[in-house]
Image 1 (cartoon, rainbow, N blue to C red):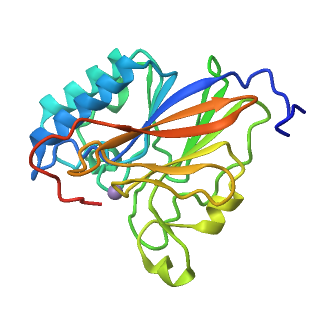
Image 2 (tube, protein in one colour):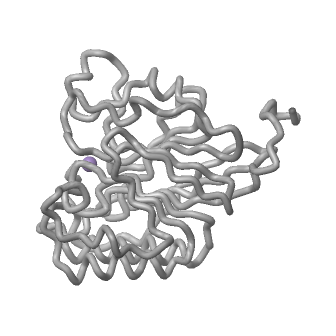
Image 3 (cartoon, rainbow, N blue to C red):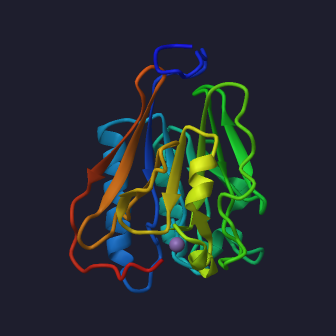
Length: 253
Ligand SMILES: [Mn+2]
């Protein structure tokens, strides 16, 4: 044990992650702004390099997204040259429908798309990082984005990604894709990267740190989150404020 009480683990090296969500590429109400916001996320990742990028849902807006946009997104994420983990949110039907023309089989090696309906773990041995997430196939009250979080791997950092609505009382469990505060409090991981709410928000329940990154196209406060995992200092999260582009989005969840 070190002075923080976190057991020493040689695989837990200092890491920086970029956490984003709710880009809504292909939106029919703000298509250009969505691309501008995506470009701002790429700029943030290039300006201050990170070890991995986590996209916590709603990268795309719908089932039908112009092919040029899909191709641009894939090529741009490949060019980041770090691992990119994508969790499908409720809008990402292009990533979850069997009828989709998305090039699932031709993805660049650094792009990890979570697809298993009951959740899937991506292990990145070079980073000592495991990332688990459960895609949104059915955006309804019975779908629990953090339900079934597997036990912590024996070594390294462990991050959960979830796309849903944090609710703090049982009455609100009738909302679609609910994440209750007990689930946040009991999750045995180092960080919970959330998407669905378009504003940066700290929803930590004592431990582990749990944040919404905010949407890069939010009309008032466009943000991404930068997450620092440090073996002695613990986990720190900061909002990175992005340029504010004209013509706001409608905060579609
Ligand atoms: Mn959503």
